[in-house]
Length: 319
Ligand code: CIZ
Ligand code: SF4
Image 1 (cartoon, rainbow, N blue to C red):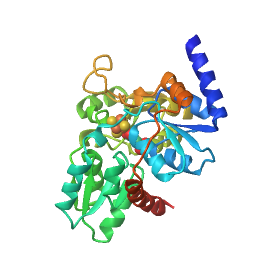
Image 2: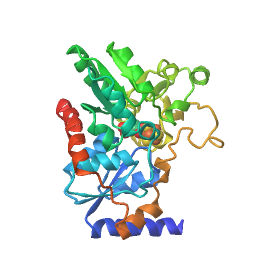
Image 3: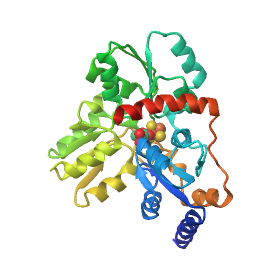
Image 4: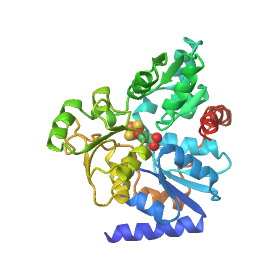
């Protein structure tokens, strides 16, 4: 406990001295989210993290999240210094979609508009026409579908499948998945719903179709937090990373929040309802990178410029 207090003090001091700002994802440890809020940083989803970093005056951004989030911050703000507590914090979607294999897949289907999810490397984004996040993917695909475009989608098969069903678009899907959301189970969720008949079920669309089918609300992290705040129910069953509970409980202190059932239980399953890569961010390595200036995110200039185009297309569409 004493060590934590000292580490937090050190982080506050170093952020101030270096005029740096802490940007944290909803899935990292609550103490990092707390620290980001308290020091004038930001706690949000991947899109808002990048936007906040871009618009903030600080020239150093410390990104507590996973690799693609650091890269997107760098792509949107090439002149800023981006640090991450651990550069090996990655994502199963990013890992499952290597740039060379992805380029070959695109080359084999030149008639399709290439749409990728934010959870991809800079090199994959550089090959895409559009980048989307889970909050806007549906609208963008519907827009492209209305123009008669056929789509190549990567890398999350569940999100792709959900968007395909909703829009009726012609989508060819890369077969990636998130190891956290992939663990949520439809049958067990149905049983839990019987125990809590008044509960609303909130599902992130990286979850399997059987889980999405039971949802009262399907949405991005921000959309799910908003649902807890605005819906009149008092109990919610939530199918996404349990890191989100910090913000959800803050948004609705008196509501009961339950994480949806996974295959294993949390004692035996390392990735069940909590991302092992998000969990690599901690007070200790955060303090260490601020002190040493190591772990700077570097994106190749040419790749960064190409990736910027596909991110910017989404930002323009959202505006
Ligand atoms: O699952 C993730 O990594 C999410 C939801 C990222 C994001 O868009 O905030
Ligand atoms: Fe990737 Fe899933 Fe972790 Fe998000 S929760 S960073 S999608 S592995």
